[in-house]
Image (cartoon, rainbow, N blue to C red; front, side, top):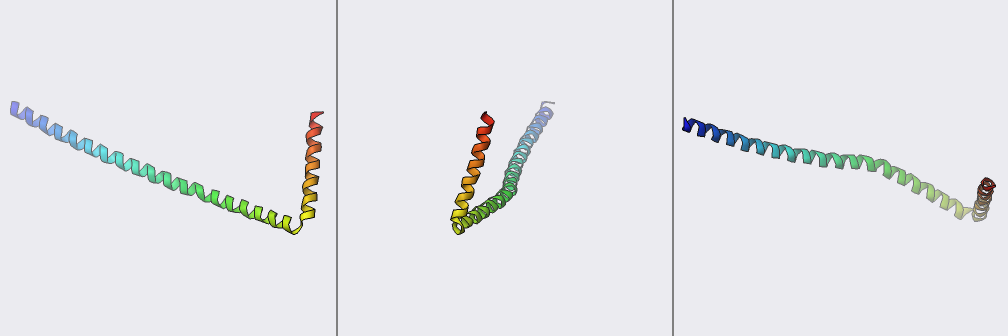
Length: 94
């Protein structure tokens, strides 16, 4: 009887050890999956950001070129916009 019980306990301990190993492997797999999922999500998120940055840079280059080609018109336009904004801001105070 004691021998059968000891054998059952030994078998249970071996099964628990195997279960621990399986959980450890599952945990490692989940960590890898999460890490790769985050990397993939970051790559998907950065692509639109890079496109937007490229568009902003292109627009800034176009504005810079326009200012260089027509400096007086650009200065007068900026002055006019400043006047309009000043009138709008001062108009709200009163």
